[in-house]
Length: 580
Image (cartoon, rainbow, N blue to C red; front, side, top):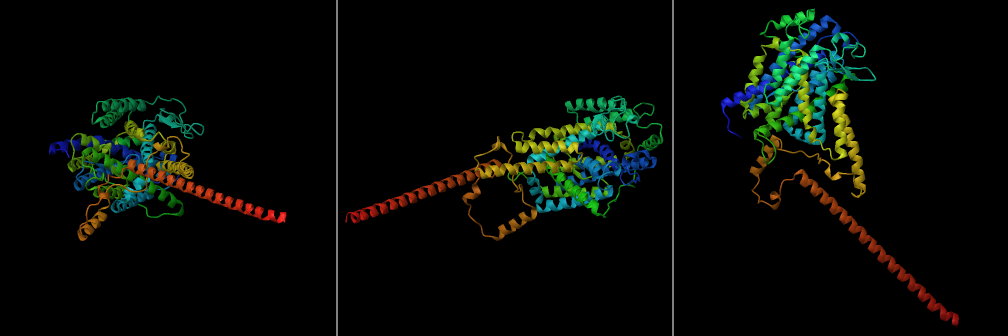
């Protein structure tokens, strides 16, 4: 590990907070679209926003979620830094919050299960995640899913966030629904010109001033700052759009002269205050009926799978950036504690009313500033805790201020598309299905199910043809397929290592054999050994068949000779008889 100092760690912590601060407003904006614990008796949940009481309750939920997000990010980052000594900050993750809000619970509660039941699924997911981390099954589950599917999942979530950032509910309003024939159409019209039946614009496309404010100040300006590696680019874009939207006498104001606008402005004028959690704290529902059980289980395992993949990939990339990865087994110090801490705050986050917590890739900005220890995460956590008292400011950030942030985060997630194995059809098609189904079905779970189904079906059929043809018939680029195995990798669980250590102390010392000096079994080496084994079995089979053919030919030749001798003897014996 590189040398560090307290000043470097503090600067890195401030940088990490600056690059992550957008999550306070964005997460609250996304999760509040569910309506939280607010009740709406209308059959069409999308019409609930026309009820003033429901709108006021929904705004109260958003303010609760701002406090909950800031508190959860602060406490989890603080504990993570203290217990793991790693410069990684935690917060409710992007992607999973969108899946939670728009697929599981749905807009205004129009989804498959209620907000309270979804929080119960998140709570159980944290407990299961901790169990898997302690037993070592997390490594096996990560390896069980093909790497190309895991990469495609991240890309699909990036497209998903981009679609949300372009929408009206949590974005800039550049796209909207167009009916049955055109599920998506060009938006950008003022909200009062949206058709309540189809969701499309009745006219005035691309004339909404808030959309253009978001595009230029929140999108292009932020991307310009990112091009010059300004650490606070996302925060600057959100802050600039918000400040421009705060004056009341402008066409882009977030505080119009309406009852809803007056309520927002009254809360904004408080500036510094403590907003208690009155709508989201401890809202778990332990009652499940026959109709919601299936959706509950589906949401639970989707949360679990995506969280395991996301936490594993993020933590490994961050610790590799720090230079603390063990080159022998690819693991890092206190990895079990790191995953258990993440799992613990997933369950605690459910009690706060939030979607699953995960490690943030934005922690890399702090590491690039010199952060190498847990002090970086502690400083970032303290900054999040301090932001709790500025809830009126974060609650007054409009959705069009965070829409371009979602698009830019989605763009950064999509960059890993180059890591998909595009050379073999057995990897290409399942990856493409995952990447397209996640945004178009508006569901991470459906995208994963579709991709795994295509991967299993296609590659099973190919494997059967290759096996029964003894590798005489192989698809194109078959040797370029991505290696897959069900075996786990990395360091064994802590209790297994403890048992091995205890057994090692009790057993007599053994001499080093030649097998311990063999090189590590890398995927390429295992693939070469497998091909050699298949080639050896094929050669042995051919030799056996040839021996059988030779033996059969010898037997036939012997039988033919015996038959010819019997005929000759009978002829020689009968001829004298005839002469006589």
